[in-house]
Image 1 (cartoon, rainbow, N blue to C red):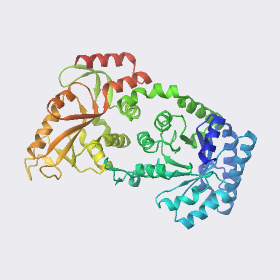
Image 2: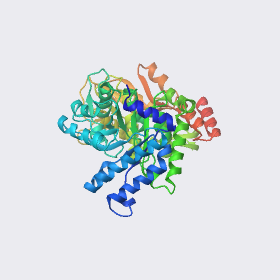
Image 3: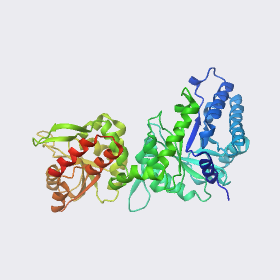
Image 4: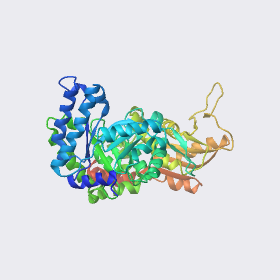
Length: 485
């Protein structure tokens, strides 16, 4: 039996593309504020991009704003895609971006409107009213639905990152991961996918782990800051399918939309190549599923520098890691906080303990995203008031996980463990963003503690060398320095 996604995959093969062209006739791009101008804007894009498009995605809101005339224009745009499909001899799916979501009877009316009246093949939906609000849209396997999972807008996390208890040993998970799990279970007809924004590639990778079979509709590439290569590495399935990359303004605002679509298609297909993806992501998988994104972002933010630096010990180092810089990069801080969560979900503890000063912002980001109570040991006890050595509420006998930014020799970790132990807290685990692999793991393990690192410095160096992000001589100098020290 044909399903929406089998039809989509046939189109992907026919045009060798993963590109979904967004048809968003923003008022600022129209010569006049009329439905006719909106229709003509989309018609030009369809003609230019059709040979390179796996799908088109008109946004209903820009047409509805023109009232009845806009509704007629939207139908004409969808019909134009149908006519282009006939010319090419290959069905080009139309995904209506309307983000519907309502009770079952209302959902049935929305489904008739989208599929029978307008002639769309697929619809974007909000899943937050549950399965019965989705069912009317997916009863026909040839019609599809992309459920909102993790959207690309800045405040998506207000709801989508709230943690819920899914009843498994791993404990609380973000709501968007729970939605992904539901979608995977609901996809009995092969016509449910997920909307996952390109601006959160590390989340995209986690959602892929939860929903390994589903297609993702991925907005946010280029204009909203999403990196195409990172998205493909994180979102594609092993078969090179599963990620439909939506691009709107980077095509519509290009001086040559046809060329822009062709170049995007070619770039996607090059990065889709199994050999290319394997080569580019091999060291990433060895270190952490998040290493490719974080490695690049840490360099851009100046958190890791190459040159000649004098360390506290007096040694001259060719690399300098200063994670205090992340406080001026909110999105990076959020991504780093999220990167700790898969590690922490495997551990048993009552609260997290961030170490001053660099790790306190990181621990705060972790606390907000993972819903973990936080404390921190002060570098020096207060000389006034409560004279507290540990800030935050806790009870003697509880277990705390130490959160730090970097592991070098382990010295600062032992100081913190001693303070926490004196307050009656137990420590079994230490979690850091980067392990410099300079003896901290061995020292901690010898004392009975476990070190967990999101990233290892050797894997970061391998990645930067392979991607050409850092000159090879600097990589070699750093490896030699680490080997000796």
